[in-house]
Length: 265
Image (cartoon, rainbow, N blue to C red; front, side, top):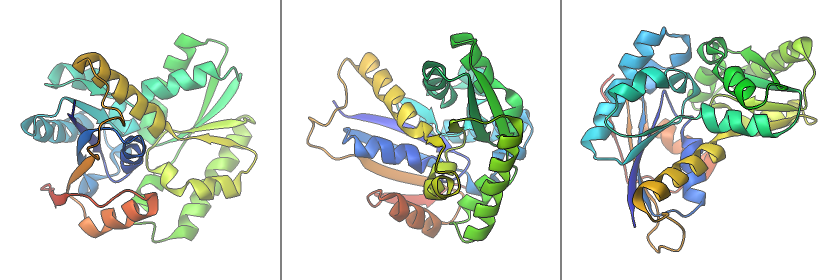
């Protein structure tokens, strides 16, 4: 059975979730909406984040998607306000990541994310609910997502920002594991690994992709698995530059999108 799902993000970070779904060979039609013109969402107040997100959700409702993956930790931090307003099920990216951290059995873990995501405290709250013995040490960045979303044009600035975040985390508490709590961050995973080879960085995209597949399996009665011959398709709607998407998709080795259309800023 073929399924149609939506993926939303403040920019191009959610393409890491697309990569995870495409790599599974699932029989999916994916509609991706990225609001690059208004990113970073992580520096905005909650009411504005909800308003901008509802514009994307309304567009996806018109496309008759069965579910929407919120491939943005900042937006996921407002999911409690969004669910009553949404016409389709929402899969946030914080819950599966928190479950993974709680299962690791490490007393202290790190979190790199936007200011809004860290201040929300949702990762720490959900991890604590599942495993009270785990403490989450969050380090926010007001600029890393925007630097990455700019088609990775300034690698030195990206490296400097990541180095600063690592220094701040070391001052808080030494950890062996850091959750990349912004889907933009895994786009430059190699920089994180080169600056901190002794730390394991968790990409939440695979965890969210698994959650999406489970939801579709439960709702549709049949998993959209690789047994189906039809390859996944991808349509992109963005308020940003199409060429930037093509560059990041090439970097992530995502097949060419079927279409890239305009979302008015």
